[in-house]
Image 1 (tube, rainbow, N blue to C red):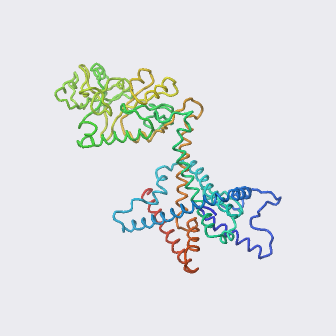
Image 2: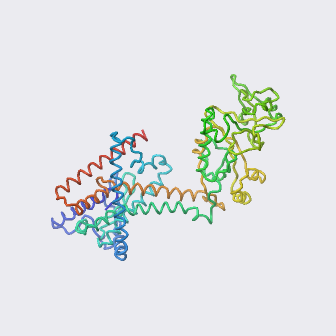
Image 3: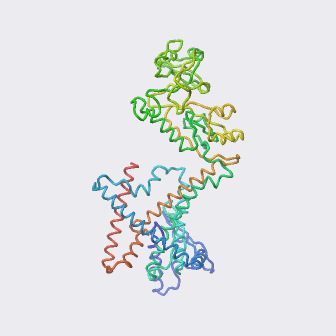
Length: 549
């Protein structure tokens, strides 16, 4: 029995060859139950350019003893699995029919719940070269759990194993168990169902355990890690726009003064800022919920700094430019027209200047904020105005881009770490700057792409030691991949298609739970399997063409 790789047919082939050898009077078998010296061993029995496997008998007796010693409870356990697997088989069959009807435009509106999305939705957006190791290990573990279910269910009903095998088929790992197929067919009908449904049931339970592990991971790691206080940087690739601004181990405190607790909140705030930028010129209801139309944000820059900046302005091909170590700032547009003269510099710059000022962004972010576009309130009353001798300036940006102030902190300082924890309820950026625990910079560009170009984690270690920052991320990703691989394996083996557990389950149902004759049973089985296989292949090809081509 093998989930997902046609193991049942491999068992049949083994039995046929074994019988053939006996009929010719040979005493040996295709695969000896013991090695020549009488001891169990591991043998490379099948090998080719695309497939190889290792078979062993070492697990036969331990698994059989385990199954027989707890047979009473295991039968109840796997009987529950029968109900679960039959329910899943019915649901995936219904989803296949709905996908076929949707593809033929028989449904209006089209079916929104797709089986292909359930099976491959995760892989469409998460498979990468870096995830190859996670996929390999997760597949090996999930298939082993699947086959362990088959083996334990068979042993609980007194069916002995022939061998256990681990194989590698075109770089994909797997496992299978083989047992006496004739004895299984002669067993009571519910025994066969328990054995065939055990793999799907175990994969479902494994999914639940992985989900529970993800939920309890912060509690498990609590003695060594802080979770959900602030996201920490794991890696900043050289191609990232944040390269040189953030380093591995830095902790992101806030975006535009809004505290962030984990990478998900970073993406939510970036998405909100991006939407506000796209709709700022439309005077939409969405924007009115957060700020007044055409509101801007900036910093109150003394006119003396603006005067100094005019001495270093560069003009190249009639275009304003700044040296590489300086950034271009322009005056903002505010709504208080009665006080708009305060935003005009001593050199007569209009509210939205076509010319800019070359300023050091690291110095500017330390100044007082102005404007209505900040995520939090900056001042009481009219926040768009600056005091006498100052102008409200914001970074110059291209159409379609936005900017935000990112505050970060260096890690592993006990004082700063304690400040992060104590500020969980009352967050204030001024507290971090007063204790020299924070720095800030302004990012101008695509915020969402920027966050995709940096690796973040919600965990911070209490103490620094080699690879301490990467252990929670490793455990979290491993659980996520194992969850999805096991879910994929359970759903695939529930399909009524050839070479999978769904074929065996459907055959047992037709053989023992219907009044059809042998010939009609075979015809119905072949029609169901052929239809299920063709619909599944067409659905997966359609999904692949839509999402990958």
